Length: 141
Image 1 (cartoon, rainbow, N blue to C red):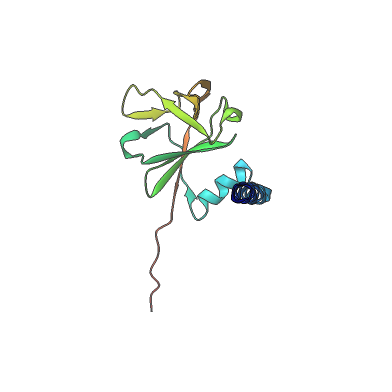
Image 2: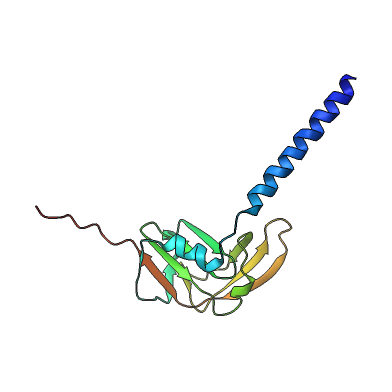
């Protein structure tokens, strides 16, 4: 009798977890453009640059089928690949082979599957657009 109750309890818990997961998946997922707009909210675009200095980059974020965002603190650089942007997946690992301390618009980035680490493709880079938060201006009395 105790065994049956235990099995029933486990089955009920598993069902509850499944329902919670389904409810979380039900909320609308943002498109890549919407995700990028949210990430850049409050920032101002600067003049595109050909290269970024990689030692200053703290992290990168892949936005599905849209862009790669390189974060260097106050400035984030948006890379909209000219080749292969439709292959971008936020679950991929970016593999970049650098020949100097800079990543440039003539370079490519390989895409690797996070789980199996198999090669998924590549993207051909374009210019990097810097976005910064405007300096706060103190109001005079």
